[in-house]
Length: 123
Image (tube, rainbow, N blue to C red; front, side, top):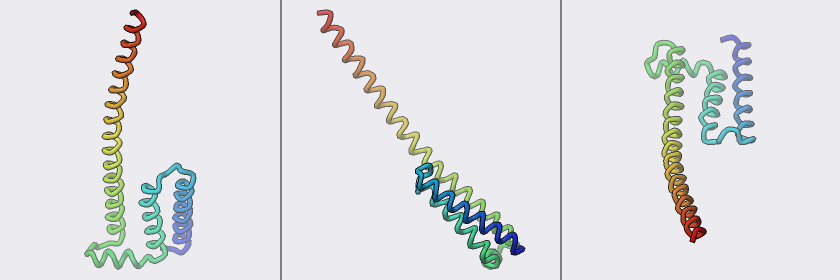
């Protein structure tokens, strides 16, 4: 990998990490979701600064080419994101169901109170 490409990737990774930090600061992204992206940015920066590290990792795991190792790490990252989003969606679904039930109960109480007030007004 050429030095020019390494510099561009390093600058891109640093800008991405700073952007994610800014999104957390202005509360547009929660820290628990940003941590995954911080981790990926740092990992990208490490692999950019030490390109031989990917080769060592791929040889250690018995993967023929470093690009295959990078693809494998990307797949693991995507699976991690999908799994964490599945957990979030499950929690939100449960909370939405509970809120819907509570609103239904409150609506029923309001209707009962309105009927009671109507009956008292008629008497």
